[in-house]
Length: 331
Image (cartoon, rainbow, N blue to C red; front, side, top):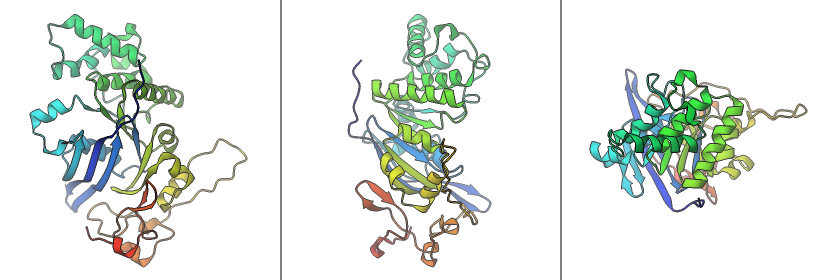
């Protein structure tokens, strides 16, 4: 089959916000996030646990209803769709969940798990059992699952095979876009490589667009065309993958990259430790949320918010060090 090449913008996210009500105020899980992904490409999203990566991915698919903002998929505003319209849209937008152990129904066989979305979206009727089983076997072969496993249950399989079921289930309805929520973090390193190579092969074959969420920078470098770095619900840097690793600009990005282990016993680590108190995500205020941990923070950082600034072609950063005075804005 011919390989697909990247095209125009498939997904455009504009000023996406997701707040949760808590007794202490609103928790700003995702705050004013904007980006786009071209057809057939992968946008990697990185950041430490709790930075809002998974919440953002779920808000894009409306598994969490966004507080505000727009999500445009092939020009259609997903956030404005009614329930029936959104159900139809889910054949085009799917998700691979992080945990292959809890994301599968333990009472369903491999056949039932993969065929479930086919029945929900009425791509096959229950009377078309043979045609549907043929489709299930086709998808199993596509993701590298042996046909002999078709009647097995999740507890009989290892983590790699379980995650392949999750990928097969997402691919069953022929989606154009998939949110990959840390799909290999629960797997052994050797199995991680197999699953990542599978995802790349599927993208090359079918032109699927990925939003790849991970905390593993070595994984995101291997898979992504562009990378977004998030900190406490906000984007702090966005650029092409090669730019991020050759010219990291934001102090938080630099600290993340310094923590990547190097497989060389003679290498002397240049680790950048992050000290200081974490800013609370509950009513965090207008200043830089990284200021309390930033070694370069000044008094201005704590009180003045800044927009993304393009410091070189396709390389954006949100930092007072690079923002001209006319970039200062109030939220």
